[in-house]
Image (cartoon, rainbow, N blue to C red; front, top):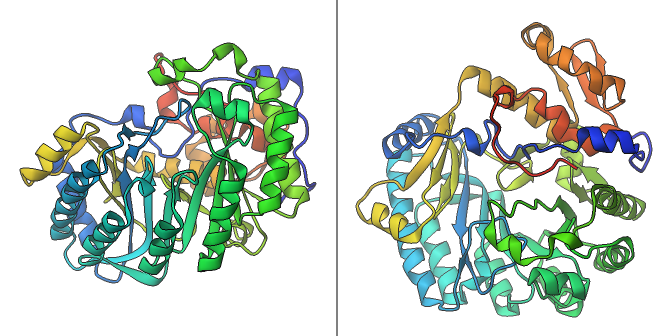
Length: 456
């Protein structure tokens, strides 16, 4: 836990020194290290390994639903813009075909501790399509009674009827994308979402008995400023969701061409951007939320808050969690599985995804099998990113002596404390936790680095 409710203010010199390009570490090794030669056969082998864990070992399931009615210009997700819901029927057909191929490899391993539908906009699907997809999944896989079953929704297009159906199907957590309530920011990002509409959907979710409602915000968008951001924070606290995610905007227009539609000159500078995050931290902590990981907040009774107090918080591609299973199976275009000690990602283009699935082959496009060194480093980075603490142990202190030496400047700057084999990220260091994790990333030592977003 923090020794004080707010993060200390970094100096200008610290901001300059640590404002570098770096991974977000939703995975390790990071996606640029994955290989094209990791294909269908390799993924099938890894599923066989996952099957050997036995029937009692649960799985996590992610379903990627890529469709959106319109494109948000800040978006970094894999989406398909369409207004024809018939396209979703074709997509569901192929997702369920892929599921049949996956479960054929998983043997008796059919229990689910976590289900997540993401996108895109899952509620692009109408009620009939939502029910058909869920029925197809539960014919083969069985969520446990205490499973976390979550869905991402866009409040501006999600109907009360869709939310009612999702609750009846067994969904118990809903994540609402908000980003910012400022009309000017919404206009320049092509994300239109009135506050009143969001409140109505939240009230309906609570009346249905959803056990958790998450809000997602983004800081660092064009025209965001302290005054407008303070108004958004005030409105969010009126609604008081159970969890909040406050993501740093990754502006990479060379990679995401649609981001060029936004005025780069209107982006807040690094100091202003960091101030937006600090303002969110202060507002949410003052309102009784506990900081979780590097960019989440939760009410004190939330299971994420309780897990972090035990230093038992985990993280996968779907976010911070205490329900994540040893293996994560992903369905749909660009879905990323984490099974049998390997990452495997499906192809993006729908025609290719459909072709592969119809041929009875997995749609794997790239991936990587983790080495023993990868697994050790992933465990260290995950602990730092989730719990701001790690115990390297006696062997780790020896094996990572070079990394500990590279960590000394960060210790001198007050970002990390070391006591024997234990490392703790300080309250100030939480602002730069990605920089701390980068010290243990063996792949960043190459002369050529992939393009990443800025860490500040």
